[in-house]
Length: 189
Image (cartoon, rainbow, N blue to C red; front, side, top):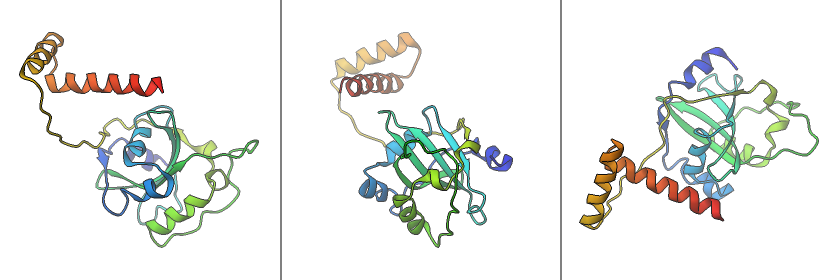
């Protein structure tokens, strides 16, 4: 991977979602934005830079797994230290094929055209995944959404007591408990 690109990866801090990219992958490939984000926090994550398409804006390809172990291929760029997903779909690789590119990736006029291309083409025919590297995004944070939650006062007080024993804020402990339960429920199915 290009050393300049690799150095930039550690500076990314979040995700860029808007009307231009939040629903397209869900509608076309049934990949929602939280799943796209998950691959950047799970291992293994393999990233390859796209020098040819990085003249005006850095482009990268990623192969990774969601929390539910779904394997995804993602094309992304970066704007203002935020990862912007251009295309996301299930990873596909034809059996017996060596992971080396044999075709040139065309030039794209816009993100929509690029998304359409990757929706119908296998990345192993275009990207030399042997050059890809395992990456860790050390400063990256998942997107969050504020919610309002009503709890019985007694439950909240018990939560605060447990949090105090662990020396963590009660809100953080609540997130830990939710994450553990979600993982347990998803693992049971």
